[in-house]
Image (cartoon, rainbow, N blue to C red):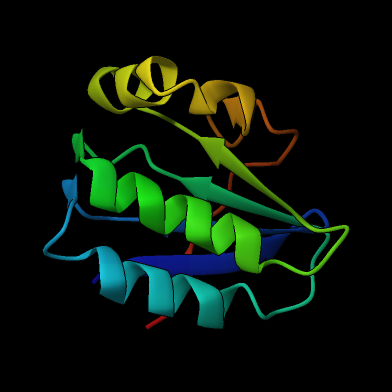
Length: 117
């Protein structure tokens, strides 16, 4: 599982560098994201720009991570590819999450990321 995280402009930015977020990796993703998201930051921005395929298990893992955040903290999404965006739109989860076209649109400066595990 290739997750990279960094604190940037008051937010924790996590980039998933996997082409698929599906049943095969959903549990590992959820566990690693919960560990990474334990770092203090009011916003957690998940960059999904590398993800080309998302199934219901992957969507469920993202929702689970959102629900695991402490009150007052928010999980936002950035960089959804067309297929992933379609899943969020068809399930109406696009009304649950704040979705940005990229991390720049989330109000963050572009910088390199560091390996989170």
